[in-house]
Image 1 (cartoon, rainbow, N blue to C red):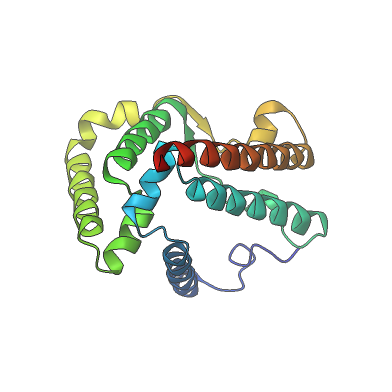
Image 2 (cartoon, one colour):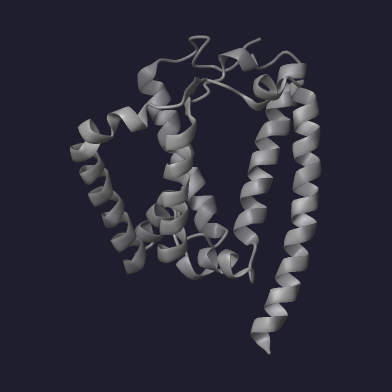
Length: 198
């Protein structure tokens, strides 16, 4: 095993920040090239007329999952050293719903609003400004929200651990789900795009 590189001491905190910066710039570039700097394109998924966001993001998830799986099989990556965020089930569900509502209303998620703002789109700048204000308000209210914020803690849990299955089986099931999702997305796009063009 020789990865993840940071955990094996190949570089320190300073280099890790540079690596994160470069990856972030690259991620933003490819989001913009995929058209994700447009609030209209992003919001179109909620009207079921353009499922590009679903297809691109699901492809990224499956690619990363399959890649990590095979890198671990070949002894290159030690999956036990890959960082997994702590799970706080109910607060994260509530947070996801709030984020989803904001996504539908504004047409952006935090990442894509940065892309839109970086390319000079005013709606992206306003959305990003709203995120900053929301972070400030949350910080000020945190003492009141702390008990809820840390409730239903489950630790660093993964789906294979939670369901008692092998990582390989989970990867296989997610790939099948992705293939079904892609086929369904294509069908939905054709159905609802025809309805809007008439």
